Length: 293
Image (cartoon, rainbow, N blue to C red):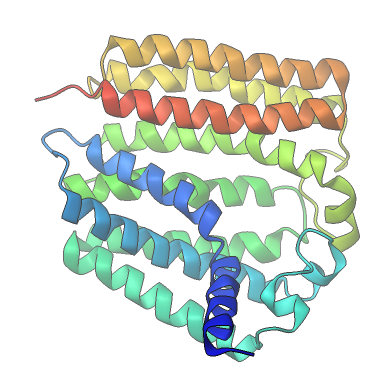
């Protein structure tokens, strides 16, 4: 095997271990939270440092997740090719990656921004890696637990820019917190057989994809409509963002209603893609419609 091929394979393994595709989306919401702080202007160096810190912390959390689930990952077609279950990487190497990236990411947040954002980053890492991950085997409340670290990135970004936990940061946290439920239940619906085989309990009530699950997803999408308007009411963003929040919220709600009506995987897949559309549109509009102080 050539050296270049070996290096490329190792880089690919680390990318899969740290889930860089998912991590990029998480870190983007952190940057949005930072840039929405009143008085904070775009600074390429600061944004790149925030990306680096966020990627390292989130990558560490994802690595811890895969260390925990290395045996169950073997049981699911989607996760079996990952470095740990496939045997391409040892558990010791993965632990070293998690430790190095986690410590490095928290130090970047602390030294380049402030220690409030570093503490929040550490809390998010611990909640995701050591509380949410094992909880998935116990009961469906794991989704509620996981929604906390899942919604922390914009609050961490806010803390990095403002060095406080003011209402504006919490309004961004609330949007992403409520968004987690329909988003993740749609994913769990699509992968229900795989998740059940691995022993994960991710859907509410009796843990099956049914109308009750769809109704709960619809409830959370409905709550997102007033939550999406909150940044406007707090004078963080302008009126355009409020209008878009209502339109995007109705769109997302309709996707959830469609899942309730059809009760099938294609409708769940539409809800999942709808969740990505909703969050991306919301964050971009909030950035573009930020109230300048």
